[in-house]
Image (cartoon, rainbow, N blue to C red; front, side, top):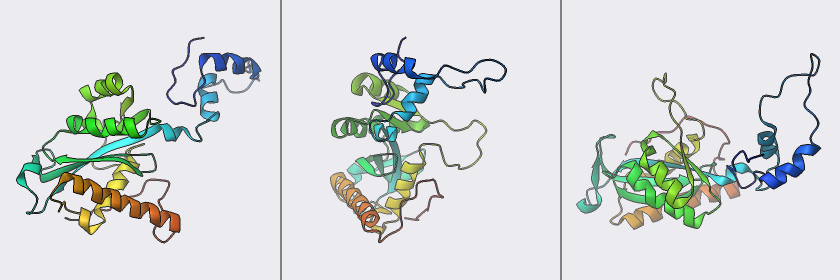
Length: 236
């Protein structure tokens, strides 16, 4: 039987599935045999046999945030995001599924998501090779998906809004990276970009995330919740 496709490192190979399948109980049939199985058995076993500790460890989240800059920031490192109506810089981050930072890249706000995301995805590929799938919003759709597949050998999956959605709603899978931006902008130094160099701006974001992690470890700050919550907006 051909493989169902290995989305995660923990998924069984064809050879492994050939050994496991005969050991499973026969499907129930007949009028009193119980409910018909809804999902393929191989997918069910893949969900149970998670040798990486958690299949979520093989996934990441990417998003961007346009932020205003201080007057002292050089004009050559600033731009205008026509979609967000923001003049300043754009932050690209990749996080794990808990919202903890993996990669950060700061560019001018005029850079489109599908172009600015390439370096962040490349750094994620090099520094975190176990991340095989990254979820993104519709702004990253298009040629970037093909580039990630052919160049990085990684899956970039677009999480699309419900066609009937009105107003803001927390997006499945992606809420964690949106919450990370809320954590960052809660820091006064990051509510606006004050740094002369983009590399310094990236360093400040890493320092802020170190503080978030340290507070978790020492339990001196608010715990990172395991589910979505309303995002806190901080005026620059």
